[in-house]
Amino acid sequence: MTFAAPLYFLLLLLLIPATWWHFFHLQKRQTTLKVATTESFRHSKKTWRMRLVHLPVVLRALCFIALVIALARPQTNSSAKEGETEGIDIMMAMDISTSMLTADLRPNRIEAAKRVGYEFIANRPNDNIGLTLFGGEAFLQCPLTTNHGALLNQFRLASCSMAEHGIIAAGTAVGMGIANAVTHLEKSPAKSKVIILLTDGANNTGEISPLTASEMAKKLGIRIYTISVGTDAPTKQAVAQLPNGETYEATIDATYDPETLKQIAQQTGGQFYRATSVSELRAIYKDIDNLEKSKLKVKRYDRRTELFPYFALCSLALLILDILLRITWLRRIP
Image (cartoon, rainbow, N blue to C red; front, side):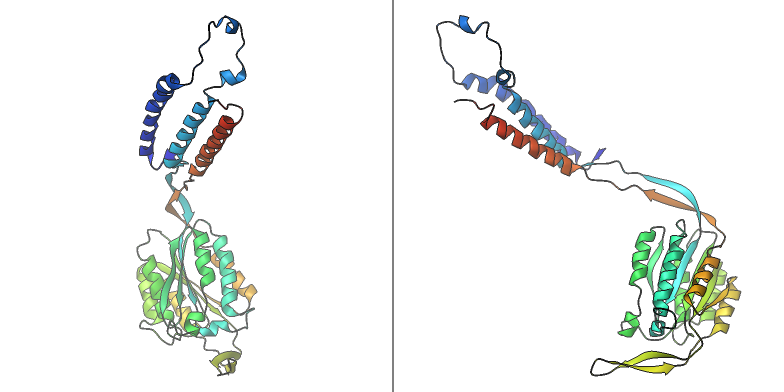
């Protein structure tokens, strides 16, 4: 057990003058009764009240000690340990353009991709995994981390609402998504670095082309696995909102660009996949799950637990016990 504020223990020095005050000064000021002789009291037995006459003082001292310990903030021991674990560094780059709301995968493409993504992350507890999102622009949603609880929370927040409400530019910037993921893998010490790119459309915006971005990845030894989701059939999609609040749907032709995705995968030593159903998408992630692994150095932290509430409650309980004894069983008159 450690203490966050050990200087509070200096307050225990106050017990020295308090003890002296009780046993040497106050005893002299107590009420006395003069009698002719004490012979009749010589053989009288001491009662429990007489034996415990100093109990309230002891309780007050223990109450004070428990309070000082609470102020010093006792904590369970915490430590940081470095170790090695098997794993790879993975950046998941996911398309959040409005076309990902298409319902050819149930309930829609983005929700299907998220659900399968959860399973993939859960099956790789030793990997550093991060998340990049892209529509007409790309941004980092979660940096590389082995804290998969935090990663999953950020993953759940991924939605098409940013593009839908104009917070980010409309469109599908595949090249920007790859470039953003490459930036966060660039300084990684892992021997095996991977980008899993999931999109349902062709690159139609952004300052960096997909093949230029994949060339950057190739130079850094980053493999890219590309996944194209959705069917080839024309689908209905909300394209506008009417004044009465209803959405106007129109039939939209598929805008897939499998050739570019294949080139990206081949250029970087990855693989191209096509998913037209949730089961196919799950099989793809299972295949990627068989990637080679390399040793990573990780630092594990043990959390500290605050113990001061227990000592504070103990101090309060001792104070209440002291008060009850002094006004009842150990009451003194006068």
